[in-house]
Length: 258
Image 1: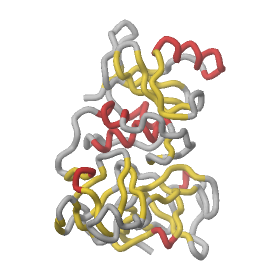
Image 2: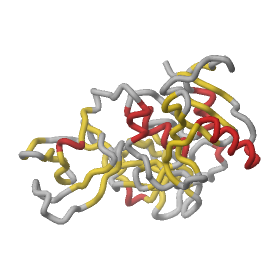
Image 3: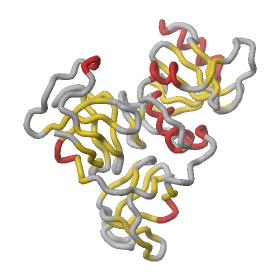
């Protein structure tokens, strides 16, 4: 089996194996390639049992399995959700019961307008919550800050729950910056190293073994973390000391995008 599909559910887990643990998540409208078997280095087995499909996410090449029911035919997408979250309605009326919630980063095809709403094949979305895909944002920290208070969720990629690398990826993608899904790959792929004595600036990234955080300003980090169990600001030096004290070691890299 081959070809491209789109995620048709508001949110779908990308699992290591059918009915297995979640590695990442995919949002409505994101493209996946159907594969006979994801990359062998991930340990995934060849073929998919009934109800599951082996896919590779086009955004970052991440392999895994998704429920077959989560897939929709490939179709053009034109806009992304730029708000923290929005609702999908059956009519251009916010008093009607919503069909679903869509997260920051979800993608839709806008086919028309109806007052304050954009029409899509799935329903109506407030136009104020959408941005054209060809108009990326310029500040990933501003994007990430929209998710302040979002619960920490291992492997999460949405405003319902997100982890440290998910917060980096969702912000980078909104700014049209290619970004892997996991922190180790992000450390290798993103930006260029900063000398230890270089002042930190907004938009820099700090990496630890298994963790990554945005620099909001020279004294403050913004990250999804299991200490707060949420996306939160934290004084930079406090975070460095806390992470070292809990046994996760020192900062392994300081990177600057661009």
